[in-house]
Length: 224
Image (cartoon, rainbow, N blue to C red):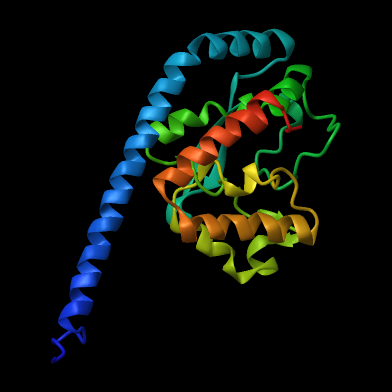
């Protein structure tokens, strides 16, 4: 069998085309899941959004929502939405200074928001806009630190996590690696699960991660 002008055998070319079609179908299904989940989530959670907005306004001065630059697909930045959980005059707009347990910058309602992860819920709007997915590596701020240095210096594979859209939740989060990346172990394991997700991602895995997130974080409240 002869090669064609592009260096493929006919069977190789067939497999390549089949792979592209499969990938395109997978992307369409994932976007469908994102839109369905975001719309349903916003409709079902509308009363909760209202209660949280009132609580935030009554307990501290400032806007209800907090917007922050995050890296998205291809490393491009976008504005990620969160319920404000810190006092306005103590907010770190860059996000490089990571939140720690008993952080004095966090408001009383902010502690509840972070424990329940309700502070992340406005990112459903980012999903609707196509900037995020329900599931994927968590979006990091520019200059994100890992073990005291920039993540890309800590591990050169870091930029690979930008090959997919960031998510509200991800494989790292359901495996217990969320929050601080101050230690080499935490930073390494976070990146390990992010890259593992990119390698094995599927619609079934996304649904499984969403279900586990609801169980582990919304009901058990593992944030801070």
